[in-house]
Length: 119
Image (cartoon, rainbow, N blue to C red):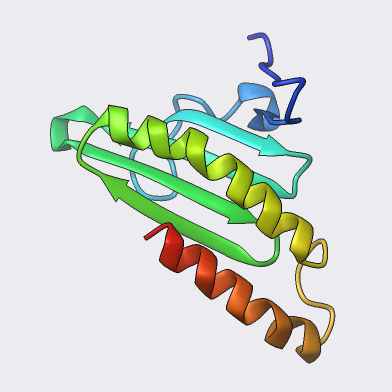
């Protein structure tokens, strides 16, 4: 399998595409799974038999946030539209998670705003 990478953004197939076709964290089949260095990740899972589509975004050490959709078109649109916001959020947080209580407190409003925007 050839790894896909977007040279403009740095997003590429997570683990070289090894997760594709497997079961995702929400119980669907992983259709797309992309990340930036092991820091940011977007995973799209689907199960057409259940009209189940979910995009889970993550920032290593900080956030795992699933969003549920009724159809593939909406989920795939969200997958792409969340990339810039996730990059912005990741850039504003210390890499790998909070190193102190102050880090956690400072990150709280950023994480909450992201979740509200993408709920």
